[in-house]
Length: 353
Ligand SMILES: [Zn+2]
Image 1: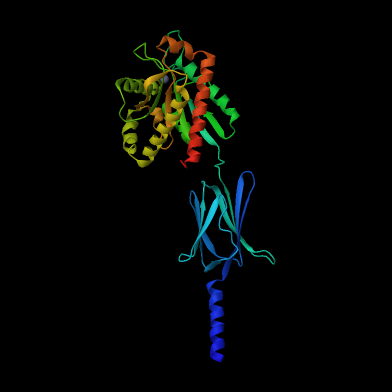
Image 2 (image 1 turned 90 degrees about the vertical axis):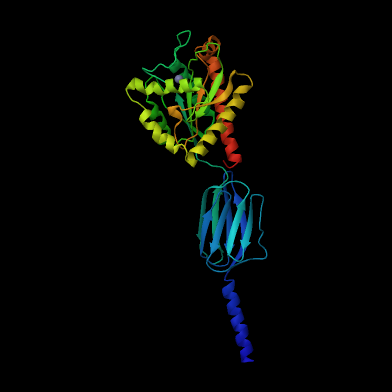
């Protein structure tokens, strides 16, 4: 008989140890922006956690038990318990941001709680660098009607900044807001210092073929997609020579890093941005044939910032030359650029890019 009681006693002890911490309740809460999940436990429990894009894993020190009344999911998130690993996984439908996981200790009549706060939207402002090409002693191309490229790029840059005022989630930084000279390397440095999400350089150059007209978009390539692209990049990259600096010494270093995976990803992102820009322009604006081109522009060489150079048209063409100095055209252009940028980031948000 005593043996029997001993057995019962040991069994109770064992059960108690085996399931010392019980998840008794799972609660979900949210206000407009912030969301919260609360896991009520019978006792204060020791755990560590890992946060992933769409998942939080919580590993427990003591064996836990999921109570019978726990509702394991709502529309945003589902709870899985792996008994072998003694680990809870919370699987989210959407990416989670700014996640905070912490324990609130047990009080007299209140359960011990693991609280998870998170956002579904990245609330950090997107930082867009707009780079009006040329400036100061570097006038850029000179148009058929003596209009200067540097003035056109600055006007469009300022219009883009103004247009973005409607979108508080974006911070716009211009590499120059007035007519002064900046070295090419300082343009990319401004992007880096501002922790930029994307970099867009604005130009309106000339083409040897005076009939060539329309918008073209450039992303970085070690090899130019055609002779014209190569010549254009050479001319642009000479801009720093005006100030007595030769970029050629930097090239080999940059070229070797170009093979890096980070760079690959950045190039893919740049191309994605180009696609959104083309989509935005194509309805009612002139595009140059093979609109997306590749060349080794110095301003596109940031390793981790998707970068696109927009040739807004050619000052060597009489149609483009007239349009580019027209305010209504400049406004239209800037609105389309803004639209494309916003669509690009919306797409990224939806596709976890
Ligand atoms: Zn230019």
